[in-house]
Length: 460
Image (cartoon, rainbow, N blue to C red; front, side, top):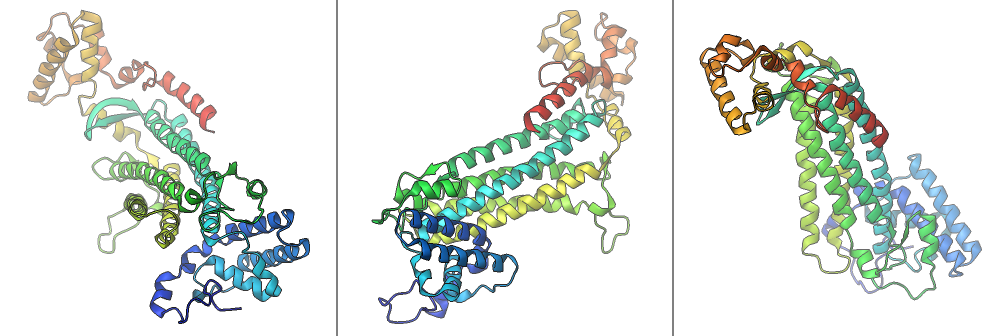
């Protein structure tokens, strides 16, 4: 057999070393060996059933492919750069194992429909892995929430203390965020679950193939409807990387909070030693490198999304070699999201919460200003704008006196409105503040307990 089975007599000269170098992808796409062999076995079985090749030849091919799979899996096969990609490497080895019969395997298919099928199979499997990892992450958040329904922390807008919330409520926000990520992955899976195999190079094939057979064997929902679209479509790649990009954005937001919370200024959490690093020169340092690296990796994944969009945007139908670059972007995005999920899950599991520091942060703020405004509306029938203005004056007075709202005496408060009573002032405690937030989705402990139950039912 020729060294490169895809090069025919139409070429009088050998491929230049430069073109070989830029053309090869085996160092990247060798990760598709499981899917490529599964795709080839399904194709071969279909050709037997459709009487395109004999049962004897087909069984020989399938047995050879199974042997190759075992060898690759056990690291007993060395991939050859000269054979460009995973498809040619496997085909070349098949020739060595079973002889000229191997040449029948590529009947009624092209590398164009082959690689599209391989990549769909790979992404489908990885969606399941990422979904399960996020599910475990949600369990971690829910576990933390169950332990901290009554743990108070400041809630922020513009990175300024705005209101009091429970730490459990904050954890449950991430449960919902990552729940949407799982939903998007599932939608991506639904759309990609169509079988391109049998589309050939772009026009289909004149052989009497049965695409229902390969569709069933490879567990696709149905066969793709248009052969040109089948080999040129990379929407499923773009969508998968988009899903991973948004997951990475959510992970980056969490990572940023971990960096802030563990800093000397906040001290809301203490990171475990095994998930922190020291400084080469500053002995007092305990750096949140895991969280910072997750934050950095999100930028790489977002850039991968931009790259795949730019690769596809100017590409005429149907297949073009530019598409070879998609796999590196897919694999890199998947790898980085997976390790990021694992690192932050371990961080949330093992971090220690400093309840006193979080409560002190609330007490050293005017986080209950909105509670006073609301009380003036409910108890004294103020319009909200009037209550807002009055509360603003009281806050301004407190600032001048270097006090916080809850530190003002009833006598001081009555200077602004004689109707202000101790009952109204009692709502200025952080505990009463969260207790009163009973609207659907609010931070009241009873709400949070119910939200945890619903999340367990919905996501776990």
